[in-house]
Length: 270
Image (cartoon, rainbow, N blue to C red; front, top):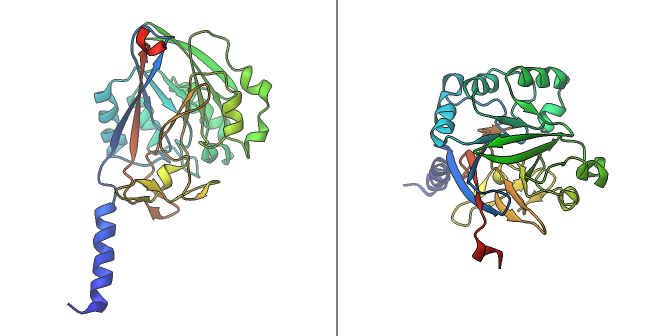
């Protein structure tokens, strides 16, 4: 083979091997003394109104197969135009599951945010914008608070964050941005759920390191997985968007996150 054809052919193979061919289900566990029975959370982030089959049937089936106690959406359910061709059919098919939502940058940047909130509320979704709800799931009290995406974390004061929680049960904060360290240090909660970084969009195979994320630049630190903070945990979802601004994901399958909140055993407290 001519050497001038070998390099493009090799690059094509590398790209084809890295295309997103499925949806990953990423499972992590968080131990807590605030629960006596396991609570299973499903994280659906950064869909950007993508379609996985008619009315998002593939995504619906996958979520129902997981059968979570609570579904959490930390933003960017919709695309830039805020249309709901695929997002709303997904939510309607999941009615019966408790769902909590906080807005990401794509929802906030549209001129339809009040309309989006109404659509979601009418579909039975708990819309959290500087507010919280307390739900009893699997016999456990779970308080979920959410803050809508803003230009930067300085938009939120310590009082804003601390004032969100009023329950002694397990506390969750939905906040779209994964790298708002100042906000998360102020959050008196047990678990933070974020998205936005899309797993670095392109990831280096084998080491699985994200290459770029908004506001974090190249080789970002906060793109995926479970992270231990000083007094809480943070789960960062890689999200479900297929492509961003025409650039497809590579070595970075779309993801549903499953977070198991499990009782803390006595030996774990030592």
